[in-house]
Amino acid sequence: HPGDPVKLLEAIRAVNPALAGRGLLEAGLPGVRGQWMGGLLIGLEVEGDLQHTWRALREDLLADLYAPALHLRSRVQAGEVLGRLGDPRLRWVETPAGRLIAPEMVLVPGGRYRLGRDRQDEEAYEDEWNGGWVELPDFWIGRRPVTNAEFACFVAAGGYEQEDWWQGELAQRWRQGEAVGGGRLMAVLEVWEFLQNTPNWRAALRGRVTQEIEAYEKLARMTRQEVQGTFAESAEEVRRSRPAFWAVAEFNWPTQPVVGVTWFEARAYCAWLSAQTGVMFDLPSEPCWEAGAGGRAGLRY
Image (cartoon, rainbow, N blue to C red; front, side, top):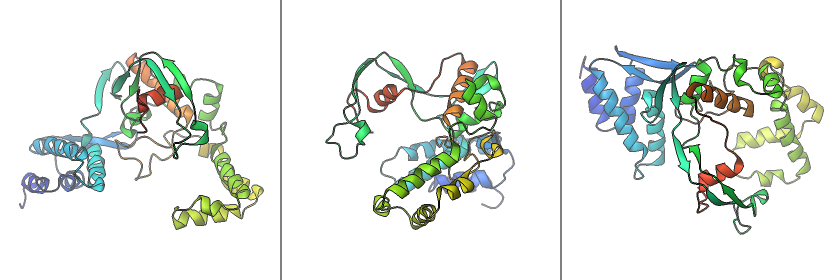
């Protein structure tokens, strides 16, 4: 279809919606603009003749995403492309402070919920055994983890620069660049101590890729002083204005869960979202998380 991108995209859409979506994203067509927030592409703005194709593509990809007959890789690709086209499942709302994406919430009925797992559950960790029972009131929980697109609203609104959202002395110190939680060094030291105290650590890590095993072997040969000198972070490395993996391509698709955030960042996002919407948001407690994830039946997934 020379000179007619609509017909070309429609022909591709009939057999491969994900490929057609990539074409719409990457071809640089007139009337197609990226919608950016916080330095992240979270969707498209489309005008003219391509609007119908754009909307139809999103519906096709949404259908593929929930089609069990499709190979998992195809469904993952559908979700990734759908996010960059503009996922219709994301709920935009107008607030006095501007537009943002509000989380979709689910009501969890109050009642008696069991925590933890049975000792007979081979996949359970020891600290999950026999958690007991707890009585919970009705509460609401997010249907999905917070996405990059949702968190991008916080980044774009200057959430990292405004002190109001960072509650408590530790949060303020972290925001200024102090590694109050130990940072990367503490995490690496924990792994180093495991390697030093576990002679058969290679067997414990069976199944890891070769590059990971090589990294562990290199770490195991280091002294504590060498680890401290290599992995200590400067204040500039700790201080940041967006999540740690914000620019890593494999993690920053719009509808992927936001990763690389500390507890401080997660709480600041909740405080900001509460102020913008007038609804109280917070991180779920362990009992609420288990009740929301497993339900009355205590489902594994």
